Length: 361
Ligand code: PMP
Image 1 (cartoon, helix red, strand yellow):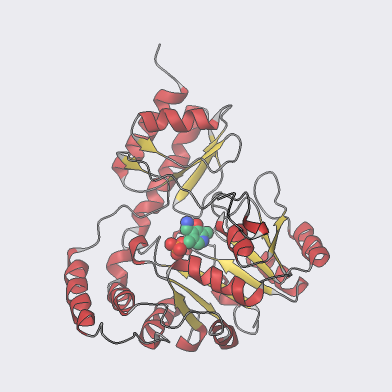
Image 2 (tube, rainbow, N blue to C red):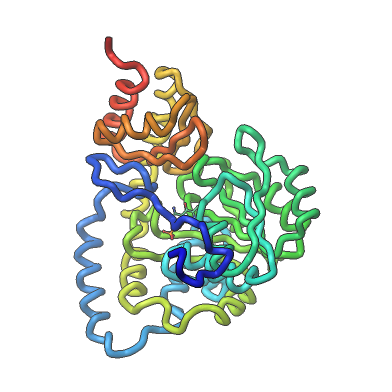
């Protein structure tokens, strides 16, 4: 690549790279391992077959029916959301990219509280903007006063708040979101990819949308819905945000197959989300078992756990992989991240981890 006239801000960067290496237990990308319900699979076959008949035509550019279904799903939370407030794209990655294209871009700045989702800086740079690291406390929580002082100083055009945060699992208090919103003129994007896994008492920023036209809540069907392969992300915000994104979205960005599959999945919301409680139970089981192995973890509201206390985390990552368990080395010294899934996966992970940290003599 070095011989290519690459844009300077992309030179020397690494692409997003969760290793896709073969392993018996793949606990590295926060997927939902539960199989999709048979009734959904049957309905998907029928819906995709029907949509295929129309593949000579472009899809609904505005995805109105899908946005209506997504609004109905979000409204189940108790906060009424309309289709005009919802926008959908190919994964929340594309949602975040469109937001960055519209509200950051060349000569402008985004700020996110690191460590957080690695795509936030990459999307910012790829869309021409500058990313500034926001500070967290050593326990990975956000100190609201320090954060407000920092955004007043940096004056970012967009602030990323990931709640629950990846890779730490940390939920962000709504007071922190409102304080950040009130301290900036830019857009505040609350990335709630893992919202459905939050523990009771951790409300969504959806409840804050009313009266805050610069606030955006980003969601995905990749995690709780167990539909990572579908590539369907969405946002809720003021309708003016949705209008602004029309300027940057590619025409017909969401294929008719994607729209049909997503609507079919949403019609099976209850069956799909039935696994969420089971996954949360496995997460809590992992957290509870770690002290017995002499390890710590960060309190998690997501479907994964950041665990650590390692002198050499990469060596532990490799030793787990040698035992068929693939976790994620997110580059935080001393820490690794494991996805919570089925009871069998938890057992395999804890057994392997026990062997690695307390080898039999
Ligand atoms: N936001 C966060 C915080 C994530 O962890 C991820 C996926 N790992 C995404 C967004 C993107 O997910 P998707 O594009 O599959 O919706």
